Image (tube, rainbow, N blue to C red; front, top):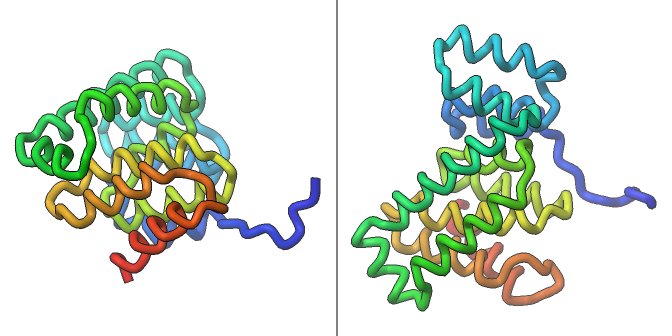
Length: 195
């Protein structure tokens, strides 16, 4: 298999570009997931310096610890459920033609199919631009399930903007065939929202 001419994204450069858009408690896990921190123990040390127990769990999940991965899956599902249950969001979803219960079930299915490294990427972004960047990286790497999870989680994470919620939902709905015009337009709209 030849990778000549294939677009690639250096994970270290991605972290450098979006470090301020990642919560400090998630950064060591993201660095472990991307291989920027070669030894997970170094990520755990960074968490200990910050005195953050949750951070250690995120790093362990990125490392592949099965108990930590299951914990992180539940953490993400609970966070998503909380976000989608806001009354204003429920109204928007109905207006956009989505059912909250179906989205919750879809998100559970996506999260249950992701490994610890992918889960660490899913929790990391604090800004919509960082979310879009990680979503695009997942697409470049052929990880359509992670890209779709980013789109769906992004739709619920930035509910302060009805437009941004709609744009992420459009990307989720059309995800993830890059040969499909509707999906390329949905990604383009998200990109142009940010530039």
